[in-house]
Length: 395
Ligand code: GLU
Image (tube, rainbow, N blue to C red; front, side, top):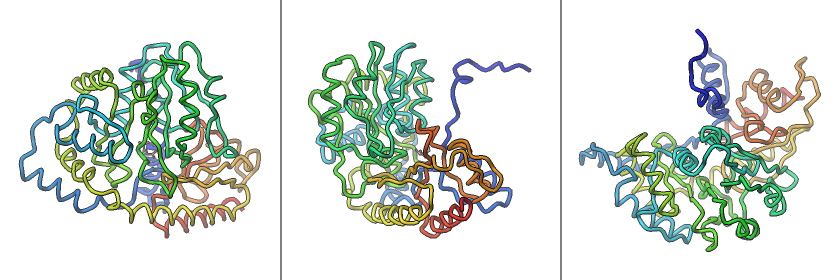
């Protein structure tokens, strides 16, 4: 039978991160000893105090629909968090709690974009940004960067990329996949360009905010001229090891929040009620409660940089946050390894999967075709073993 699916889904690329994780899982199921460094998922358990809050919510019979945009006391906790960590003031009508930051981003793109609108993506960018732009029938334009500039774009590049069709730009700091953190000065310089274009909105994805190794993170909406046109996205998945709980949220101009609420009212009716109650405990806790995870990620980052740095052909920078390294591996392009011709980063990632049994993700999916993403959200033992296998496979 011919393909009867909608153009919408036919045009949508599958998630490269989830696809690689599924492939690694499948190979493991076949008995292969695969080390999965493809997925950005903390390998810690959710802290006990959050699990206790969830258990209590079950016992207290939180089993009905919540308000579509989240429980009022959770929205208060989100407001307090934005104030405490980001110096941002929001009213409850500006907050929408969703089924993960990914849904918060999808909502925002769906409610803001019309066919033909253009989205700017400073590259490298997280795989789902481009896909969600396509799903919104918009087009997207990459603004390239490279490892030599620490994967940051410049204000000049931003200005050159803007056209009359530009409606939205997506910033992500700390960045997935590069780990780069834009400083307050970086963001203020980019904002100075955007001030000249009042019809451009900004989505600031701050999901990795707490996974940083000393650099100050800064919220784009904290620039007064940007507040009224910035949607700040965050969630509990990465900081609190709660990926599967699926809770994200936005702080946004009221008219955008209202539209996202309407969207969710037709699609999910709101986020899972037990996970929402658990999120209150997470957000109300002092940030120092997760220091042990951040310290461990920091230690692993240094190990990964040291070990990968010993392999010829891996060009590295020092990621300041998130839990990825994003080496430039273009030195391998055009070479033959074990009889396999490596033309690009996808070939290289597939080669590592097959010959080192290590799952990574090609940089193509992130708009950076010279690189691969390696997640170090794995045990030190797995990381050491994976990199030693990679070293052997490429020697
Ligand atoms: N955000 C994580 C990653 O980039 C989780 C997987 C996904 O949703 O893409 O690996």
